Length: 430
Picture 1 (cartoon, rainbow, N blue to C red):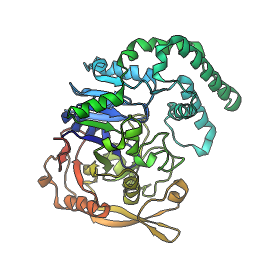
Picture 2: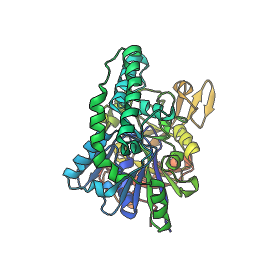
Picture 3: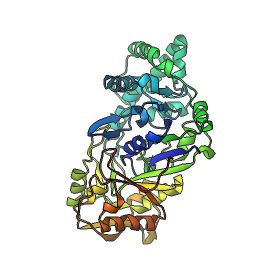
Picture 4: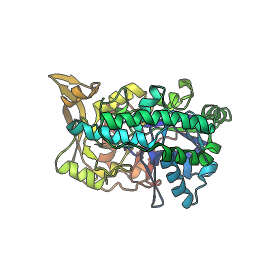
């Protein structure tokens, strides 16, 4: 029986989704990206070799697997071509394996200019965007003035539409943001030149996913960022511009919600966050430094240092409420190996009230005080372990406590960055 498996981040992104997608792709026929843009950064380590992907799904390294970029993704063709060329230089047959929805909204250089100029103008109120044009592109999509990949089929129409859109962007840049404008003609010529490469990869993603399903083949839906960055359900306004919760897998690929069989949530054994916004369990101390150093917490897309703190169960419960997790994958368990005591935030205290689920929005979350339970550390090496029986008893106790507190099974445990550094507690794709 085929399974449509959704894999999303349960925190603020950077949970290690790429590795898990790549691991499970061994039994899948297709992998689908359904939201975000090249602000995502999925790092894969296979036999010690690192590959960082931003737009292309993590299944691209598998021969015989089709990788889809769904309609919910905003697409920078310059970034896509650069990523394709890097993979092709490593012998990956990208053009044969990649298919793209014609409904993908196109990111233009003027979107990037707007993103960066707006963030600079915010001064102390910065959101912490990657500056890659993601938000402005989604803004144009919702306003129904944006360009789509399919527009490249008609060069004359594309030229007219991009000229109108960039005139609007340049007006904002010059007269509102007092920033440099973007020359239109070079962008037109560059983007039309990409058509020869990308148009042959256009496909009706929704139809092809259904064909895989009817053929009894597994399909993986790969989320970007994390549930707490969801545009509706995250720590607004310190969020991304897309639907990062599990419902985005349906809307961002064009399948119905009943086609989604299993929701796997990825969470670190602690918590990290990149950019601005509230972070109740953040540790601005030696613990935070330790987690960042041992966990090598540097953003794959941005190179920014990640903020680090203890695992946050109220935030995970909020993510579960919005996304209906079936199971959890815990990553980076090994980062906690040296700690004598591990703290778990089980609740928040907000204005005297004890909360088990994180409040919606940034202001209330910023006012929350974490309530911790102490768990004994195992102070023993778990790096690279592949057998659950080899885990120290206290590490197993930690996992069991998380399961009890969250009411969810932990089905996968990651003990290192390599594909092989994984303990499979339940087989999801057979």
